[in-house]
Length: 299
Image (spheres, rainbow, N blue to C red):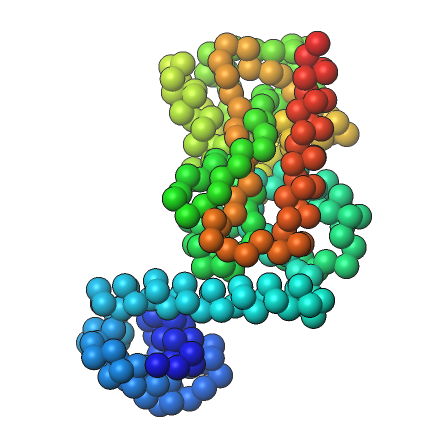
């Protein structure tokens, strides 16, 4: 069994399409097919069901895929670790996030601390984020809600209060706080179902007897403030996304605990690079200061 066979197998298994896999690997389709066949001959079992020219990973293939991914990842992690310790590995950081409102400030601090590190950030749906972390394609994730999994280290770093944002001139603009039940007749702008904050807010509102009426549902949380400012509707916005320069008033929710938890995720069995450890330190310090400021404002 060769490493090349494992690499080719993983690519085909993930895509379940020989032509696309060959294109991705920059090899001919016939060469790729022969390599997969030799691997199956070495193992003595078929890894794919072949029907009508299509491939489907079978039960044996799914078992072998988990092991093959782990084996290649361990080798890659080992290469990264020894090269980093020898000063040969360029410092890089790969992030996936579902909670991005505080990210610009965090990345600014990180760049000041680690100016030579190259980083790449992806805003992903929760399941895609988990998959990439499990495969070792990202180093860390900043997630809301937290994800509990036996292979993941989930460290809750902040409880982010969710505020009610209303435009200037709104009937509630002179208030500092409000009970959720008072919002039952309001029109809202928000993100689509499936976003952690949206699902949390909807569930809490249902618990007090109403379902928010949305006139806008999108997939760009940063756009909500502009829509509120334009008077399209009011919104539930995390405290970390509050912008004091906007013509918006923010009200706290007074009759229930409405906050999202932000967590830093890493894989328990992955090598944590110096770049990733530095990012963890920046995140913890940033949210510790945010918590201190929030506590001070309440006293």
